Image (cartoon, rainbow, N blue to C red; front, side):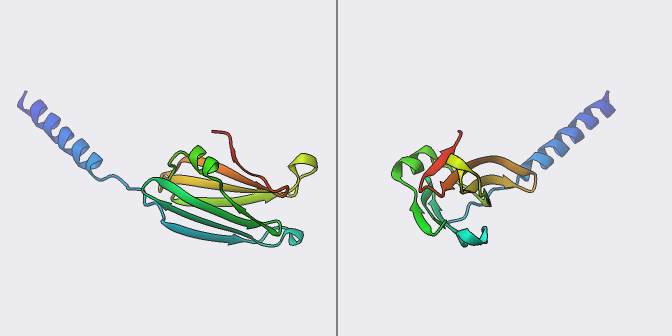
Length: 131
């Protein structure tokens, strides 16, 4: 019985020690990302600032124009705070012609926990995809 009690105490100690050290996500306060796009579109430049309440501004330069996130779009992000970003895009055809996808990430060494994607369209629209 004594060996069983020692084993249980040792197991509790190991579980407590293992769960005591948890990775913490560090969100950036300012981020500027620049990536080449298809030659006819020029480079894509994304500028993001965020604070305690999440993303406070998002500016995009792409398709030879500038976009600024409206207060409504920032509200839709709902206080989301990112610590990473992916940029991707497509030339597209018809109503989806020219799109820059700005995927905002939360995550760490274990991979992304969540993401939100903002789309800058060649037509001039800046919108939140899904969620």
